[in-house]
Length: 334
Image (cartoon, rainbow, N blue to C red; front, side, top):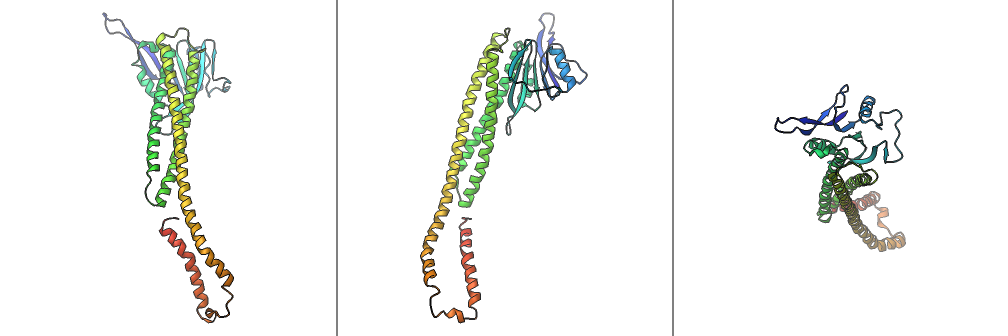
């Protein structure tokens, strides 16, 4: 599927100069790319779509539909005035943010993105692109704007992770109820921390990849004809990425702290139970020792001649075995 954003001129009247705006269109398979396209978003492209974009761009488009496709050794490189940038970006920031491979191709007249996963940032930026001033017609401006949209989604996802961690911390440190209820809370906490750590890990990976991409655009990958506002926006995007990386590192440390605290509470609960078992063992140790030494050394044992002695002994052993289990279940230690 090809989603094209192209420039169109609108005539507002004889007294007013025509203005330039952007329109968004999903191309049919047989439909050519409109003249003035500044962003071509390729979503799971076919071979025919590859050829169509290559003819418009005048350069090779690496995609999986190409039989000779191979992942380039370098993530960022330039060929014949066209810059190729590969990064793993957040595909879905609302649930568990997954990272997806995206290829950015910056040509002299258009930005081409190749992706195989859904991305809310791409859809939101595409809807917003038509409202951006005409400086967005430069491919670098479109690329930086798209990066900023991805950064915004990442910031929102990190904010949600922070709220989840605050909720988990409240549950852990304010856990109430008996031992069984607290054990359920600690068990659920371990699973929740694992999910939040996965989110942070994916977000950190995406942020690092985007930072490297922006640094490339600011150095050897910078376009000579990029307007000054584009260069300033690139620097601002870099500062935002670095700030988000620090926030992600802080939240990763918070996850580790909550994990250590949860495991500490679990160890304390287990120690209380083990302490009880140890006390019971110490209490019954002397009678057991005395019974072992003297229990069978008497000449007169009336139970030997008792008709119900054997069944009574069996029932007593069963009662002694079941009694502690019932007691522990009643105390909710098991």
